[in-house]
Image 1: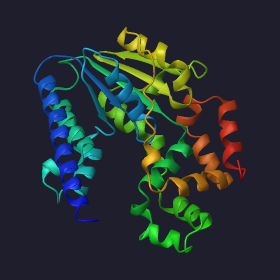
Image 2 (image 1 turned 90 degrees about the vertical axis):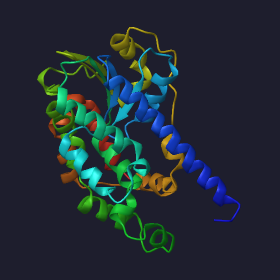
Image 3 (image 1 turned 180 degrees about the horizontal axis):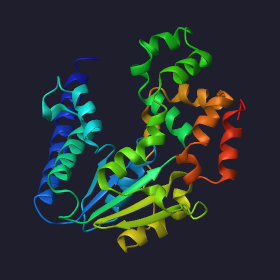
Length: 292
């Protein structure tokens, strides 16, 4: 980094902290009242920023907040990862999760209406995306080793299969929706062709949207939840800024997964509930054929 870049970096960090604090302050205002809360609460790498930015651009009366984890055990684990940092420098998503989780533990869901938007994604696509986003946690000196040719797709596949927490996607609804809000999404059938479902349970309105059909069903889905018209999606392609994007693209193009792994993912309760047999068969074909 040049000396000229240093002030820019510091200014960016300062601006980010200011913006994050404004978001926390806005959250405190809502939690200090009985106002409803609109929360994009979903697993990562499933179009969450597109969803958040779409809702924020719609001019709603409700502030829009964003979390991936609210289960106290999940939040505590992630707080431990950043415990060496002062709170103001900790990632916003961890600070938001911790604050909302604490409020839920204190008051439950009875005090206010909780409007939840949860977009989900087929498990292998989601797992691969998270793997590359967090690649440094699984592969030491990844960039250097990849560029030197020490790591090829075969080596990355072995690391992915042996080290990645694959069940995270499959268990997310039990851990982050049922355990937190008391809503069992598997308690009623999901309309797989429509691509979305609105479940009302007590003070919780839970909107489930299949990422693969988001473009087709978002208009009706958000209208059912919010009773407003959302004119367009604000597509946010987070992966475009990822330094691992070329490697990720090459891996996805050439990945061939073992039959045992395909069975583990697509015979799961998660996949069978949210995806039709035809969809699961198509996913199996995609991930068992190289050069797709």
